[in-house]
Image (cartoon, rainbow, N blue to C red; front, side, top):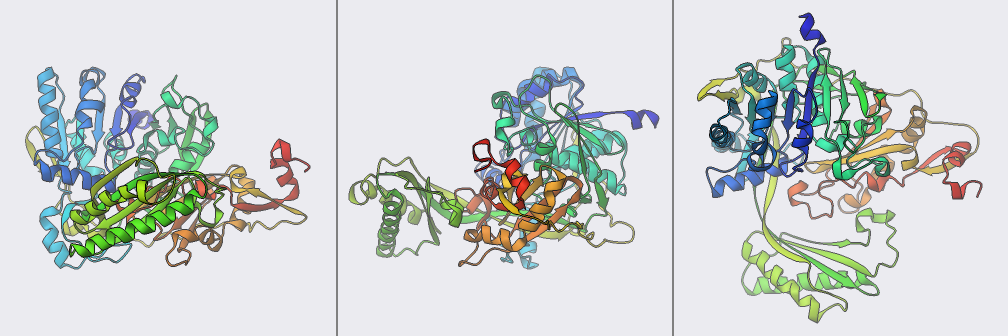
Length: 610
């Protein structure tokens, strides 16, 4: 036991998506003493991609880059190092990926044992799920037709089971992203289903690792402070049995590991930090402590856990018609005004052609002015843009309807706005909708672990003793941000870091105070009403969207959830930024009242004393 308590388990995070860089794996392989490498391939949007792949080829449906880019080329190195690999690259066909991987290993004459975890695929159960009347957990929409994929989000214990049975490489279907790291920690330290604080800590390690370089300086607010993007380091978590860990990166690589980079990633795509729900545990990250203990080394501790809920989250993707998208460059005086008129005329002309062919109307059309700051709404500073890209979107239930618009929009170059140049790209693609709901764990068969051709069910989920627990009370701060004396105003970016991300039809924006004593001013300024007004242009019919605010006292942060502001979600939103990567950027100029002396101290050098 003493050895286990002292042991440090080092886990490297190699990918944030199935299309991530080819440089991460060799970089992490060069890091000494690495025990595990995890690769996150799946997101809600990617499940539809893999589902469509398998519909075209029953042997497909998994992340082929796992074999050709990320892991396949390095199998000899992995075997020589004794490194273990865990990845959710199985998509909707983990068995197919495992077979292909085993064939590659055999051809190389290596001795590596592959396991796969499945049972998450609920497509055979779709008729019963639809008949049960499940509705989308965010929008209330009814269960869709034309299902492409349907997967429950499994937890980490099946991964731990596969490792306990001797697997060197574990591939899974849809598991919680953070389970890729929690599974190895359960295996290494013997954590049980009831050790909720430890499960929450392992979940936090996985959450920080799962997006790769986003925690080592990628997409960081202070991007100028991050050196060498070309060779940015991928994260390594040095984990201990007590749940604490140090977040770092390989020596000699670019990037940055700081309290700011870690705090931003910690709140990325999180709703309530005090009740972050995954399959194995309900996590409370509100009291997490971040400590800079050296260059590119941040110690993370203080996660707390509560018993898990009795439901799995389920993601269903489905066919949602067809989308035509065109990108038209428009130059000259009043470019945005010309583009708006041209878009209106092209949509009207295409609708006339639809009627002439007895086809239904478009289900949606949209115009996005790229270069005119349309995404900023009332806070735009467009100036007099004389070159823009006009993104035109037309959705139709049939491919023929989308094709009509894709062809007709070419007429703008010769028959409409002056300064219209050659189209930069036009495409007609099937649309994928996302439907999310909760399903009782008791209604889902236990996850299966297959190793060496033998399939066994993982231990079934059992409700925690005493039943479910209510959500923890929201943490609160005592200071209301009031101050005496003269006031000044500064931009939010001078007081805080900020990060945003999508989750279905909503997005979150995390605001982390650069110093603890800045937080009261941020709290006073960033009320839910003020933030809702700031994002008013993302609401419907001119009504500001609903906003929730969550307090994170552990590292002096606020987390905002902006509801129903990404209509269609990442796959179907027509906006310029369906992944909500830029929503925090839009908040950086939010005016915050501070004492006049602080405003003067924070003023750029050229404005001091002005």
